[in-house]
Amino acid sequence: MAARAQNFLCQSCGAAYPRWAGRCEACGAWNTLVEEGAAVPARFSRKGRLFVIETLKGDSHDAPRVASGIAEFDRVAGGGLVRGSVLLLGGDPGIGKSTLLIEVAAAFARNDHRAVYISGEEAVAQVRLRAERLGLSEAPVELAAETSVEDIVATLSQGPPPRLLVIDSIQTMWTQTVDSAPGTVTQVRGAAAELIRYAKRSGAAIVLVGHVTKDGQIAGPRVVEHMVDAVMSFEGEGSQQFRILRAIKNRFGPTDEIGVFEMTGAGLSEVANPSALFLSERELGSPGTAVFAGVEGTRPLLVEIQALVAPSTLGTPRRAVVGWDQSRLSMVLAVLEAHCGVRFSGYDVYLNVAGGLRIQEPAADLAAAAALVSSLSHAPLPADAVYFGEISLSGTVRPVPQSAARLKEAQKLGFARAIVPERTDAPDGFSLSSVGALSSLVADIARDGKPPQRRGSRED
Ligand code: TYD
Ligand code: MG
Image (cartoon, rainbow, N blue to C red; front, side):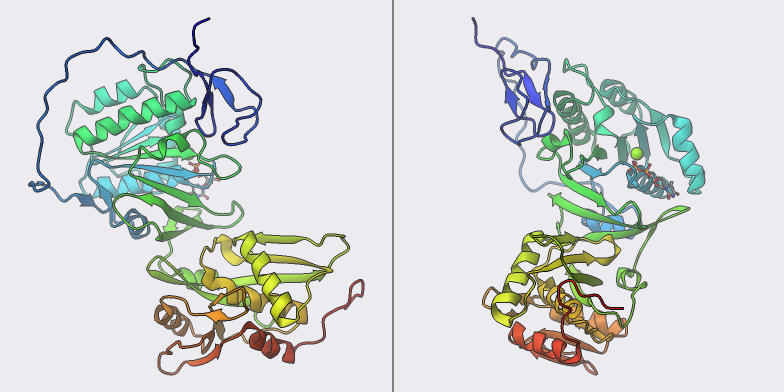
């Protein structure tokens, strides 16, 4: 029997296998292998075509980057969309990707840039209805419901190339060059490749929408991630109105910037001062909450970290965390136990970052530790204080970058003091308590609190 082509592709990670199996060995996903058409066989060899080689220096006629005017979007894109670049926008269904992109397209169109919105998921009437609700009906966005990449490219090649082309979504697109069903890895890859070729040729900036699976992977389009110039994800808790736009990869800009939006009845509105929003529903005076003075990219951001330490009835107590890293929580708990004499065995521990934000900075260690100890000892933390600092395994509190920006933001929002690592400078009129070791912070908090509840006892 002749050697068989590797035709079974994992729809999650794109790994190829010669035969079907229940589980993908590459990514561990179950039941994701699907047989797909073989790639078009290599044509009989032809002589290479000669092409022009250019220099790094050259004259580009137009501004290489065009800003949409939606500041939160432009910030994440690195100042605007680069000509001829392709951006993948991932996010859970219903998070607001289509809403964001119709707003961006309308902003481009209103600034006299040709903007085309192709929907493969919704009918033209549905997209129009949404635009009407958002008050964007008058914006000269060109709209179509299409799924064939060849038709789209042929139609767009007729006029001047658009400045922005939105493809909603890449999973619904199909190209004739590939012989498998829409939505499969091969089709998604083929359709993306065609569109990328069109972007480079015409100079249009393309935004591809990609759906995300339960575990946060951009399904199918994960195989597209390395082909595109930038990958952004649109995140948020469905029940909350905040939405965070985050750059995961960007060939033309930074990857640590975030954009903050609020989903309202009239679409997404920009949040220029997210700290005020994240702190707006603070409960003052309750134990277990600490305000963390963080930095996302170049922007300082204050958020509330909430902890609940409650007696457990389980043999193995629960450790749950939302918006922060599970292993960092384990580390902070271990340091508190080993170096500060705080016992968490026998207690369930929950940690939550308010507002649906996800924090990645190690600088949040100190705020998390303060919230945990505050909850355990029933001692509310001072309402006018912010916390930041990284905790090392030896129990010392280490300095973190950009402390001046953090403190300035805290001062702007009415905070009067900060609990920070040693060797941090304070702005005028701001009081600092430097902590060198985590144990001294624990002693300070516990001094004001009641002794911890014992397991099984109740308090009214
Ligand atoms: P949508 O942009 O369709 O999400 P996606 O394209 O990511 O699947 O957004 C749908 C959600 O947004 C829906 O649950 C309703 C909500 N929404 C508003 O709250 N206000 C609005 O003005 C609009 C248009 C949508
Ligand atoms: Mg949509």
